[in-house]
Length: 252
Image (cartoon, rainbow, N blue to C red):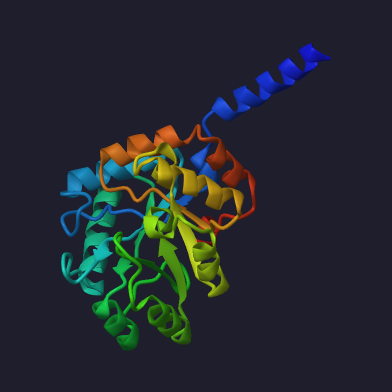
């Protein structure tokens, strides 16, 4: 009997050590691949290099999401669309089969509220909006932003909630978002400990509580590609991919 249990446990360990296939995610929906407009790819060569690495990892498409944060990155819809077109032209020129769309990662500030009012937002798929908060404290206008997005017909997705350490004390903070119909997007690199053990721990808790709907690389540079590859052996990531929780492919 003991030998049977040892054999079963060994098979379980082997399964968990085999890297998961990110082709099952299919679409990366949080990245910074457009050249020279935020803290992601600095030029076209870096953009193409990152896209080729995403293809190697199994992704067939991406909705890249440059920052719109008025105090730092004053991007707008026109700039982002133009840069997306330039990258797609280069992909076509090089015969690289990869579908690149573009939305934005909006910072929860007054400028974002103005864009909601003006109905000038870039969506992921149909009416999905990716937004983030500050890392020091919950933004005071969070509730109003969520309400105004939904009144305008948008579906809010909160970027990397596992990184907001002021929420780590209780899963109730995340449940509050789900109760407001805000979807949660996890950074795959958080599972590697890149942002520290507390972020890794809460990431795994959120997965096991079945609170995560979207998975993103948040890729800015080659190190994030390497960390994404490292995360493929994380057992919690396997559990997430084996669940029916992920909605990345709904962004087709």
